[in-house]
Length: 128
Image 1 (cartoon, helix red, strand yellow):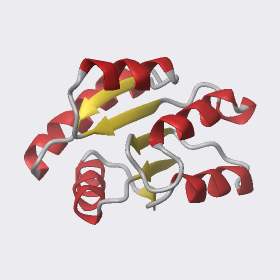
Image 2 (image 1 turned 135 degrees about the vertical axis):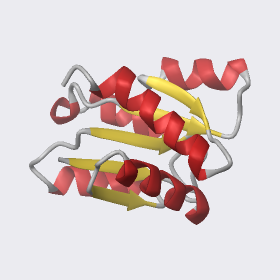
Image 3 (image 1 turned 180 degrees about the horizontal axis):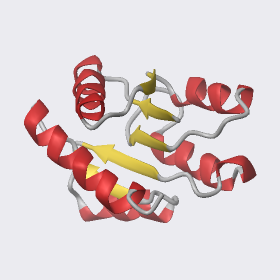
């Protein structure tokens, strides 16, 4: 299965993909812009196993991306997890109200990313 990472920071994208690779995920599609990820979703028949989405992106926000994805029939059942540098309750509420299945504050190093990714897998993907 394919996992989508929508992240405009090259450093965070590398940390996320390294952490996912360490957990055994192989087909990782990384996008810097939400619009490009939507184009990918629309042009592929197979739905991804999950989406990790930066809440603050250039162009379309991660929150708006999640709203669109959650309204898409094809994407029913696909967890969308919001990642952000902010731990403000209002931002968390906005992401969850948009349909995010979870919200995690971005860690600063690979070891912590591996712990966050493990929690995401345990919480949102273990029942698959």
